Length: 506
Image: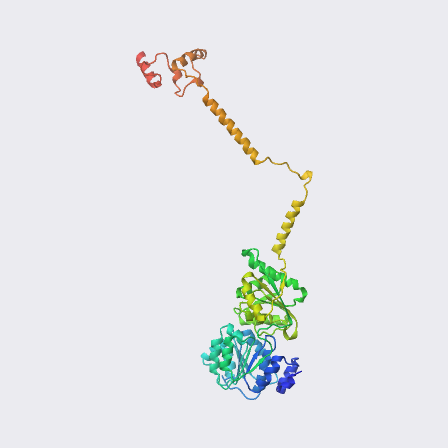
C-alpha cells in the first residue's frame, strides 16, 4: 500500500500531512502527486470527496518552497468556481504549508478591493481566486499574470455550469505558455474536453473512478411526492421534508438540504426553524461574512441543518455530514453526484434522500441513466394534513356504522312532497270556491227611489236622520228631500240639487 512518504514530497510537507492525521493517500492523490512533482500537466478525473484538493496543494507547496515572489506577480494561480471552495482551498494551504514560508492571497467577491490590493502589492506565492474577481483586479491594472509557474483549475465542470468557460479561456491566454497546468473535474463534458485538448500539453490522465459515479458508502433513497392540492403543494412538501428528517431519528446528526432556487433556500430554512429545527440558509445572495459564519457553524457542529443552493454542492470538505436531502431534483444530472458527495466522505457512511414531484420525472430519468442504477423508492411518510383527513374519514365511517338508540331517535319530518301536495290541494279548493261564487246569480241592484222608500221607516225611528252606514260613496245622498229635479237623472250631484231647491223655496 502506498504511503505519503513514498510520493517524494518535501520533508516539511510530509510533516504537515502527518500532523493533520493522514497516512495513506487516496487513489487520486497517489496517481496525481508524482507526475505533478515532475512538472507534467495533469488531468484528474474523480468523483467528489476523493481528496482532489490535496492532489494539487501538496505538490505545489513542494515546488514553490524554493524561490521568492515579486510584487503583483503571483507564482501560482488556483481558480475555483465559488467563494466557499476558494476559501476552503486557502485553508488547506494554511494547513499543509505551515512549516514552509509561503505567502498567499485570496481574491473573492464580498471582500474589500483595498485589502486584496495590499496583499498583491507585497507579492504572493499562491493566488487563490474566483474568475470574476481575478479579472476585476487584472482590468484595474493591479495584477500581472506573467510570472505564473503553476496554474490549477479546480471543479472545472462546475465552471462550465456557472458560465465561466469564456473567462477561463481568457485567463489561460494571460498566463505564460510554459506554465504547468493541473486540471481537475468530476465529469468530462465535451466543452471541458475541448479546453483540455487546447490548453494542456500531453497531460497525464488519472481517472480513479468512472465519470459521474456515486460513492458506494452512500445509501440513496427516493420519495415520490404528489401534492393533494395545488395551492398547498409547497406547504405539503415542507411537511414531507420534516417527516423525512424525523424518520431518520438520531441517525441524522446533521444534514445539508439542497434547493434549486435561492428563494426556496430561505423559505425552507425559515420553515425548519419555525418548527424547532436548527437550520440556516447559504446561497450566493448572502454577504460573504454571513456565508462564512454559517459554514463555520456547520463545521463546528453548532448548526445542525444547512439549507443550500448549488453554491455549496461542489468541493466543500465538510466532514461527518450524515445526511443529504435533495428538496428539489437538480436540473443537471451531474449536480446530483456532487450534492450527495457531501456525505459519505473519506470512507464514512452517509445517506442521501431525494424528493421527486411528477414534473421532475424527466430529470430523475437523466440522473438514473448517468449513475447507471435505479434509486430505491421509499414509502411516502404521512403528513399532518393527511392525518387530519384520515381521522375525519374514520370518524364519519364510525358514525355511519354505529346503531341508533331509542333515546337518540328524533321525530321524522314529513316528506317535502306531501306538503307540496297538500298545498296544491288547498289551492285547487280555493280556486273551485272562487269559481262557484262567480257562477252564482247576482241580484239586481235597487234604484235610488226604492232605496229611499226602504230607508224611510228607519229614518223616522232615528229622528229623521239616516244611518251613516247606509250612505253611499257620495256621502250626502241621505240629506236629499222628495223634491227631485226632473230630467237630471238619478246621478245628479247633491250641490246642484241643493242650490236648485233653495232657489225654488226662495
